Length: 307
Image (cartoon, rainbow, N blue to C red; front, side, top):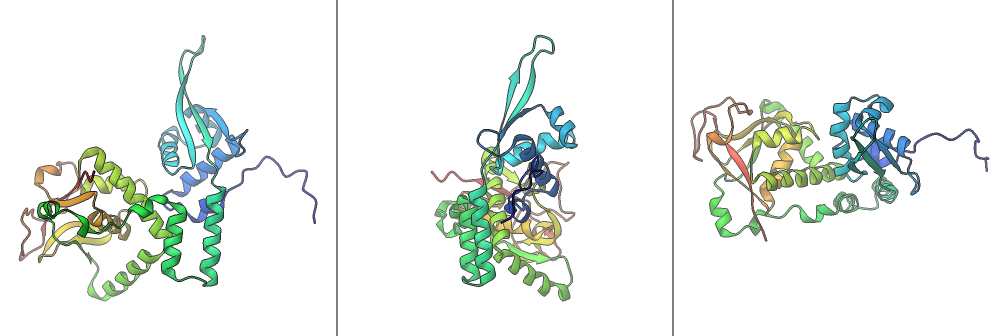
């Protein structure tokens, strides 16, 4: 057994789940998290630091704007505990300081690695892997995938959107390959975990606002994922289109919101999409019926109080 290198100190350990999991985080946000582990430490006695945004910018090289956005995101992912505290000084006056503490994720990391080993060994089916990975990485996954059949009859009557479907803006030759890729990505355990997290974030946004249009939803989710793509959300009527040029992941989030009993997708009105918001460049229609040419149906997502 080799002796410990006496020079091996002054470093930060990175759990593997940071690199291979947490798909909602960008590479820069992950790097900033590693810098925080280096600044704050990770032990019970050392895993806390107090820094102003300017101090963090100076020590990490990231801009103050990036840091102001990244800290709440890392906190939402339960990687850090962070709150702003005000400090007073007779000379400088009052200023805001972030109290940041690194949350212990080693148990979650161990579960993640074990799930990877079991996946490679082929001891469990892909369905079982997806179920355990989602359970281990986020308990809120158990609250998802609620079928639309659980909605009350009144909610179903108010939902005028019909059945949501997926189409590609690619030609027919590429469509089959795109659909196969979509099916594979939907069954991937890590992708499933990511979608669960994004759906919960979206539901919190909808609950806070009451009603959200697709433009606002796309803008909000763009902080965590790629929202642009070649997927259209269509309704069960000829040339009735709810949204255009979206990514596969965005479509998956929409479908989970469609199935979730806490949210209701329905046909809205043109004024529910402000002039400055994104709109498909199509004629507007507010009735679900067949059209000779493609028409945009302005869909909105409403929060449903299930209690």
